[in-house]
Amino acid sequence: MDIFTEYFFQRALIGGLLIGFIAPLMGVFLVLRRLSMIGDTLAHVSIAGVALGFLINVYPVGVGLVFALLASFAIEKLRKAYKTYAELSIAIIMSGGVALATFLFTIGKGFNINVMSYFFGSIYTLDNTDLWVVAGVSVIVSVAVFVNYKEMFLLFFDEDAAGVSGLPLRFYNILITMLTALVISVAIKIVGALLVSSLLTIPVACSLLVARSFKHSIFWAILFSELAVVMGLVSAGVWDLAPGATVVLVLIALLIGILFVKRGLRH
Image (cartoon, helix red, strand yellow):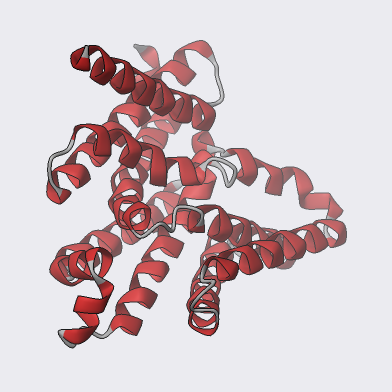
């Protein structure tokens, strides 16, 4: 296909594959910890950072990344304050992110079209700077998970036992939220803020239907994610479709297919 020879598509494919790897990698931990909605929260805060970046003429993805990291600290602070109602922290930060983004939209009316592209994704506009940022975040997230795999596994399956064993719970909670913030902030330009949580959760939902262990769930989640990225981007490129939305629809189709196959095997 001629589309594979186009530089914009090659950059889109590389960026998509990198996000397709690290998003479900973090998503497995978030889903098992029942923190699936944190992706939407950090995405909305990142959009506020992107809007500010356009307003002050600073690299938007970089400002969005800073905002997402600050929001990750705020979430952990609020989770500690509302231990019995930990989900309140996510709702509060999301509300603040949406309010701040809306406020910045009203100030900088001239760049609203540019900011809106981050809501729905603009993977075909990735430049070399974007790719280097995505690659850097991918390395940081992958190394952090690999080095701290045992501790994160214990934390997510039995936090009380992890605390008794001397594991610094606060450090690992902040680490996981920060890593998620990094993934979200670089993914919004690829799939868009409205769809970014899909890459965190739907591949994991697929993997939980077929995996027989925690390691297998990580493997299958990444495999389903990468498969959807390739199929979605190629389909979008050939038939001139919205790439981010096409990737998510492929993921949903995979999930429905797996559910039907499992139902058929039971009968």
